[in-house]
Length: 245
Ligand code: C5P
Image 1 (cartoon, rainbow, N blue to C red):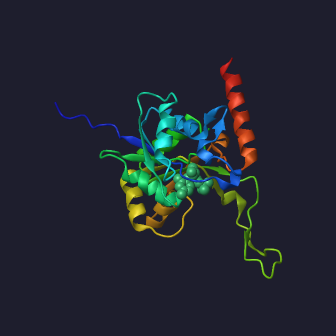
Image 2: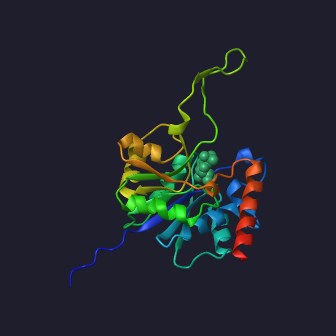
Image 3: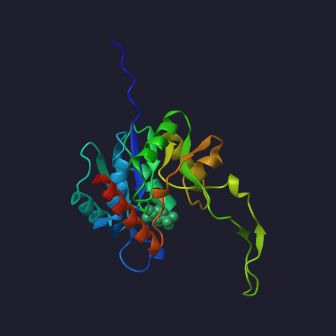
């Protein structure tokens, strides 16, 4: 009998090594709790909620891997998914690369998901995976902007920053995670692209065209500032209320 082609294997890498200084002093952001559960555990569950994801690699603060491992062991996670914890690096980019280095052979699709986006719905995760399966080398979930964006130049002599440009808002998108990748393409981008980047897809953009957008979700916002914690608790309360009916 001829071999059946195996379905693509999908893994998620969750960089969680940031200090989260914008949230104020205290515990690293990923370990702060929402409704009594660490933000990181919410993010891991959000990835494992997709039936396509069979492995989740969490990139912990450099000295914090044993603590993060204990934390995951202490929370209920879907059993069909494997979990790995590796120590991270100085920058987000380095942390993602260390997560990629930990992936076993045979992973075809990689999601990279910020620990700081604990509430992304599974429909968004699956839409990203589906677009990679259909052939895009990189896929980003994104939303149109409510605010107009200005580009500014450096302020002179303590004066106000001068505005230098106003990009056309209808062509701009605010990009979220998980971002999805053909594994080989993302690994190549991490080997060859240097310079500061704030997301992984921009590294693949530097290799060539083909990066595409799928609709993002308002609940996939990044918990960055104190008010975001209030919003995240409200989203969880709404979910609980809806589940009750
Ligand atoms: O700083 P920013 O909000 O862009 O961080 C996005 C994600 O990258 C967070 O989940 C953070 O924990 C992670 N990160 C990391 N290693 C770093 C810096 C940030 O894993 N050195």
